[in-house]
Length: 269
Ligand code: HEC
Ligand code: HEC
Image (cartoon, rainbow, N blue to C red; front, side, top):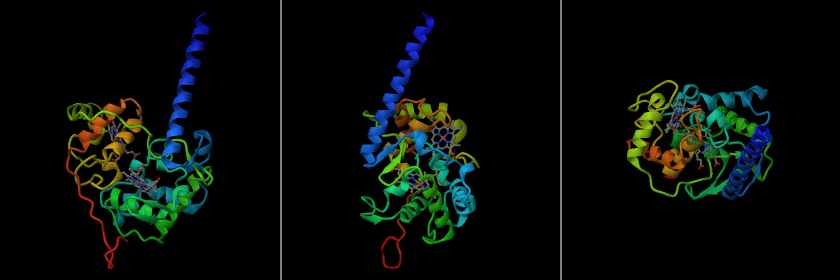
């Protein structure tokens, strides 16, 4: 009898998790207008030990240690994989598996069509307070080779399960007081009490953090990132509303202001 009950409970849990996955897939599909490739297939054979090509390897290394490897082009000490977790291979951790199928495209922010190189440069500028990364240079080519490699299981017209951020948003406004409490209970241990600069965990405000103007500085995006990924290793342990409270608390602190750099013709490079 107990065995039957256990079986029924585990089947119910399995069904519930399948339907959650289906719902998220569907919402991701709607958000990007691309068909979603299931997780197992999309992320197969793209981890670091599957990489043989030297350019791809170097691209992955730059991704993981951007600030260290390209100090001249990074202003805040961040690396791509501080946000695009596990080098862009984590579902709902700003996954980039399939990104090659989204470019070139028109973006509202740029008000023009941009290619993937230009989009990468934007993350250097906006998320890493960096600048002037040569568009045709070795580093850019290697990063591009890496993003192509991790997109190998997502043919044109598709993206991976868990691409980008979780496609959910809270429907109430944030509670700063609760966010403060949660931050000191669940985040300060690693991220520090006050913009302390550590070698391994990025500070979440102050001069060494991402600037206003970075995608992460927008409350909905930061909320969706925290909900699925933080505290590190315990994603989905806060409710969506709690994630929003703590995101609002983080964004109630000062951070650098992003300045659009212009080339000699007065246009954005
Ligand atoms: C501070 C966090 C952060 C850092 C550091 C960061 N990114 Fe991003 N990146 C984001 C966010 C947030 C988005 C926007 C995601 C969205 O709109 O859903 C993004 C978007 C992108 C996109 C476009 C994805 C799309 O679907 O259009 C690319 C490509 C990208 N990042 C590459 C990089 C690379 C390469 C680096 C390192 C040089 C990097 N990022 C560093 C947070 C970051
Ligand atoms: C166990 C340590 C740990 C805890 C606890 C933790 N984090 Fe993190 N967090 C990290 C690490 C490490 C990274 C960088 C990930 C990487 O490089 O792989 C990170 C990255 C982040 C980022 C993206 C990087 C950036 O500069 O914005 C945000 C946002 C974030 N954490 C928010 C939070 C919040 C909010 C909490 C509490 C709810 C939290 N973290 C709890 C370790 C932790």
